[in-house]
Length: 177
Image (cartoon, rainbow, N blue to C red; front, side, top):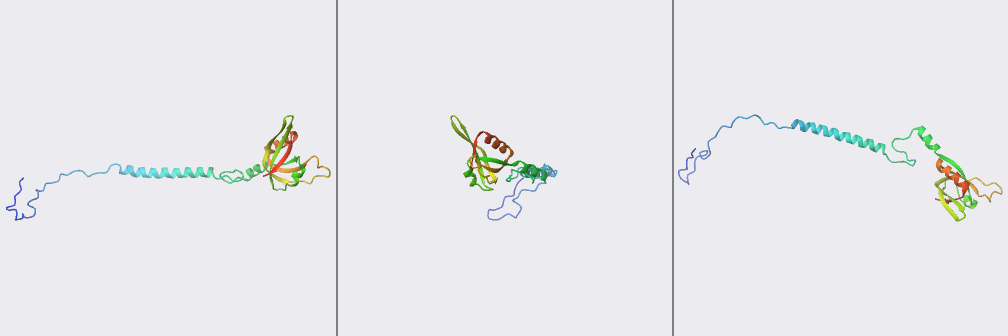
């Protein structure tokens, strides 16, 4: 291949004479992008995975929902469960050693019950019930000021058993919460 040099540097060549001659482009198969179908499948499965993850998260949040006052979680309780929970709290009559302290109490007050055991080495006190609700303060019968005063507390069954055991072996006192 030879190019025709321009006769003089000042005279321009006609257009197209300084370009190389054209050649034919060989025929080749069309270009196919591999993985196009796989990419669509991946995106479709990814959407399913995200949807599944959201569903599992929602189920976990419902199951571990916020606790109420009674410690219930998740869906509202059925009537049978509510009745069962109501039976867990009982009214326990408790004799408090200091009758004057009992006169300060009113229904609805919250109290801690303390058992003071007397021994040869001195007295030791322990809390038997925490945050017990006063349900009733009965009027003392005539001449019963020496043996203390009675108060009715609303407590769980296990606490009622501890109160009964402590009242048999120790003097009981209350503190307002």
